[in-house]
Image 1 (cartoon, chains in turn yellow, red):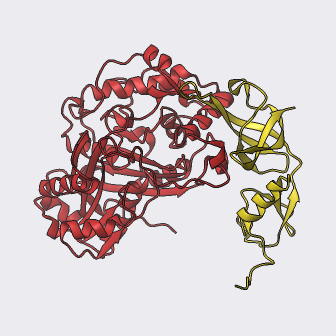
Image 2: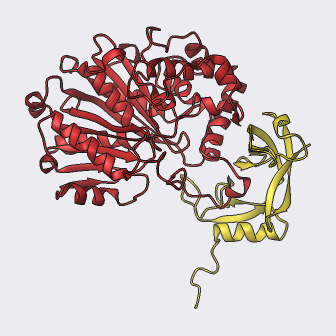
Image 3: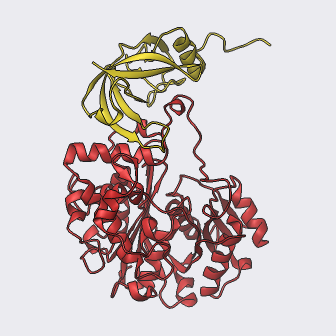
Length: 126
Length: 383
């Protein structure tokens, strides 16, 4: 089967492919310079499809946070929205601190961990 | 230039069925029970309906199934599903379709047996491949993130959110159909099992069965079909996002657009509303919606609700059926606020009747604060 679209970005496939190589990548429009996340085929509003993959700095700030409470013996865990230094916001989790010790405004840095056999971007307080 | 056909259509029947538990039925069974009840109020039968607006939790093609079940060949079959706000959007489209003569009798219906059916919570929202691995407990976690941000920016407290649940319960005590009518105190809400901080289980809506239906016609015909037609004065919708991570500002919902547009269509202001029926999936929702709809300034919602004004006799008659928190929440609650506003304006609300209610607002929320739709309804003399 020939793939007519082999040269074009394939948002989710590319993003997860980079992650498994240890790279946390964002998309950026060559024309507008805007960073984009979630991965997609066209820039919101402009429709620009000139999107390139660039490595994220990994720096971010907690925009909001919650601790999801679960029945023992499972452990409560954190869920957070992180404003990335490049602009986009992403859902993630802040590790290396108690889930309810994560605070809005906390400066955090990304790292890639393996979970259920798949790479995942999580954050740690700086 | 927007020209909404203000007052040109009216709701002539509004009914619920199976609120709480309706074991042994399917979703569409109870939706049809509510539909024939609402039609009968106006002296109509299924064969009179030629516009169907429906959105069932377990059937993506429910418009077709609904037509088949009723045995009719509708001219309009609308399956719009923007989540719990879909039903306000249905009213908007039904108004335009009736006014244009595309149909003559429109039915908006919903039903779910979320509580008694096996298989747990039914949701039409798909799991996002990027966000799924973080195990967001949706929908509650999305609303918790909003509540946490609102608290951070505006000093809103858990006690103020708890007051929303208490007020809902106090209204539910006046409604024999409401599912949760036991005593509830602020301490009960604050000490209830935590689900997703800062929200506990008493900050969350019920999981019940329930169905609702309304019947709409053009205003000229409505006069002949019922004593107090409830006119559609305004209806507007807006969508900001799907995933909570894509919501531009977690303290500002699309109600900030749908509300002002609906009020402009209606020619009324928030303070004119006699009853206000807001989609309260979680206690933070009415706080956000009261701000975004213009009942209080942005950021003041917590303090606004915290003084007890939402309780019966407290000054703002909100969620007079007990809301999604204490009356009924069968997966999507959006049609129930409309039915409650209609019953209030028709003067049929029994012990919970707000005296002389002529104007009402029903506001729906879909997804994760994603889609918002506002309907403003009024008795004939308000047109």
